Length: 614
Image (tube, rainbow, N blue to C red):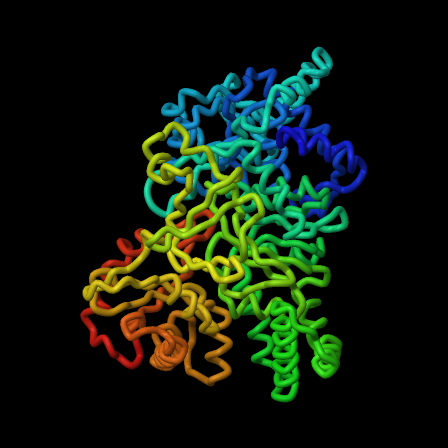
């Protein structure tokens, strides 16, 4: 195993050389390819440039960019120069940018474009440690760097950095290798600031060994090789995409194609034909919703055939996951279902797509089961920034829907007396940067990391997360209620995109829903409801009545005190821009509680058993 992530990258360059490393787009042009050799040359020149700017070993440099090959080259160049990489979400607020740059004491900041440059410059007077900002892409409208009106001692373009790097490389051709060789596995590789559903972001310190220990355990779980193609679109500032989408891609020697943005994923899937994707549940839900709408809109006979085929696929999956033999009759049914329906459904989603890993938030078992039934392996996993991403992942041949899988080999796992999930092992972080007090709060005397998540572990060692410890609702009768369990059930209603449950210190629960506009409109048209706009539809008695019936039907298995008694429909999807979601699309529950306080209060003022909700 290499002694650092920088060594991992350099070894991959030597091994794969002329193979395609990345695929990327510029403007609206078709995808372009870059080989490992060319990628390595670019990263090395950037690394020399950083040294020329004065970046010392173990010094911090930040990257603020969307998911792109420029993000990756910036990150890797920092590591090759012996520095510590500090990612900043491109959606971060000015106060978070200021906090991260000051707390990390970053000396150099890579920014992707002029818009992000202006965000950093807005706090320029408060970030005294920053000595240089590197603009990764040229300014808009043909402007030069000098025309941006920024002090040339502070700002430089990528090409200028590369020129500095080439000059130093000629003078000291072994310098980067010497920097790399001075690194060891226990050295700090990155400080990842948590996306922060509450409070100020905390800097999670991950060493080279933390991340490399994850990579060693991954191949038996995610069998990926040089013939595979990733489609990368989740934020690289987040540990999931960073470890599994950047470093594991390098580890495997696959090709990584970068989407133009999360809104273009569908189009880009058609262009690059990926075999592997990392997603958050909302992406899966959107794909499933679109495919399911097509199924529901099929003619009667065709729809029955599709539903039969999917049911056969589910039965085959249950046999495989249970280690049972697929007997002749089931095999014949599956052959027919595959020929007539399942292969066509896969073609519609992604002709070569074979493996999806879902993380970052709880996924819906119904959705995961659907994808596996049609022949696309969807594995739900679990991990935190503090655990260097995955501690648990389901297995292709033992996929327990509704769980996050069994642990990685190198990790120890147990439950505390109150059900909190604890981990210990080489993948667990070393602490929060410059915060011994917060570090002491999450580690016990025996070195176990307390995740803050509540869960259960079955006889096969498969973990099921039931809720966040801090999110538990305690109703007026003192009952502990796990909102995520209820919300996951509510999101199985076909056109519900998000469900958020409230009820702390209350007698009953209420919910706020967001709806998938297209799916809701198609459903309403199928039912011949009268409406002009989506805004009319969400106020209609028909829709509210349908939702009430769906809620009652799907929540029958819940205890009486766990059932949602009243609800409201929000007129828009939750978004990062509105501060309702984190950059990794997690719900900011406390923000919503404050933002929609009057609406939530109004639900309690109404009769708690209204037939149609609100």
